[in-house]
Length: 180
Ligand code: IMP
Image (cartoon, rainbow, N blue to C red; front, side):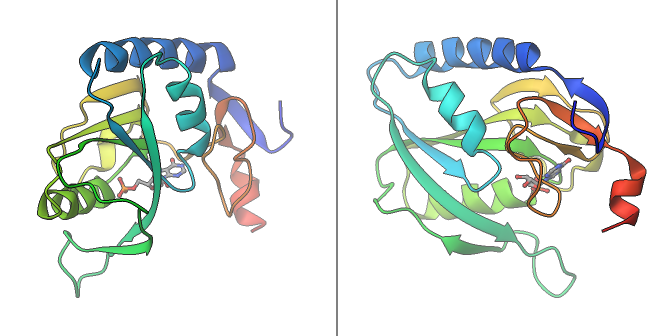
């Protein structure tokens, strides 16, 4: 285990099982539809690469980088697009791929944006659902694992851009935050 880690929440094996379960569901629901999987950078990259390899049919991949405005001065539905897709989503069956849903602000805003862009359908797959802190009532269609109310890192998720490369998901020791 990494020396900064206090405990492992989800092992590599538990994550692999969750990916298999999600892959089966998605493969079945999107058979013959050639869905557009939109990976939300950067945290969902590791999850995306494992997830899509569970799906035998054709799937298109795109990447978006977005940050939600969480200040009082703007509406919660606004999102700043830092990197947009390279293709149109009009008429496409979109599946947002997210590492963890926390407040729900990012996904709510992206769903509104993609509705305006005339996607045919929009669903969400998230490896982790952390409902404790939810501010927007977004429907997460496919959830891998339920996450307790803790800040987690690993398997794509970071603290100050670190720990994304860990193959498991865990909680950092409190002193790691104090020293940063
Ligand atoms: P939200 O649902 O709009 O709050 O945003 C979710 C995003 O916040 C995720 O894609 C992560 O990048 C980040 N995030 C939320 N909770 C955590 C966590 O526990 N660890 C690491 N990143 C997190």
